[in-house]
Image (cartoon, rainbow, N blue to C red; front, side):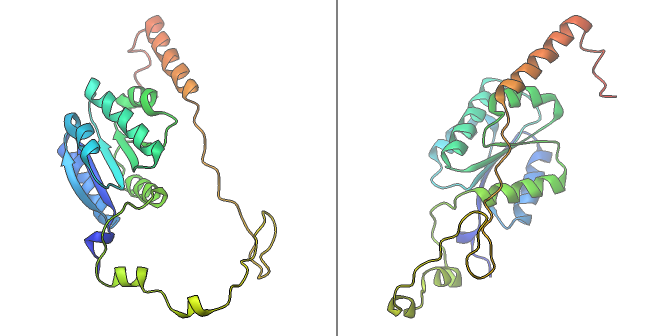
Length: 211
């Protein structure tokens, strides 16, 4: 039996019904629960008042100007501090705007609403997020706190030291975790600047078609 207390808590902010539906489907598939659904204009204030949250899901279809800028800045700061994980779902038209704000941060940026990509990104973000303090119930709480008493009666045994490239004595070598890819924010700004210069020289219509 699943208990709400142990489910990941997710705050969703979307400006379309399609975006809200996509978030709800992925959250349900991940076994999480939506704490609240708020609009872009009030999402920043809700984050400041939210007691515990595991992940913030933002889905925007259009540019909301200063309100979106404030929200993106709040997401980048909160994700960097480890307050919550965060992901932003956008159309291709908003890539430049969003990447210039949070490119290279701990916030995941997804272009489009591909269901498999959304599910994978949500699972990855939740796996990296530190669980927030909340009350569990039922057997889940018992499994977490009912420690066997013999563990305190046994004499102390040294813990084998694992070294990179070495072995722990039982055939299990230590492998360091993979390092996340680093995105250069300066490179993103250079790309945006180059695109704007290109449009000034050739006009925006010439390169509108990716083909």
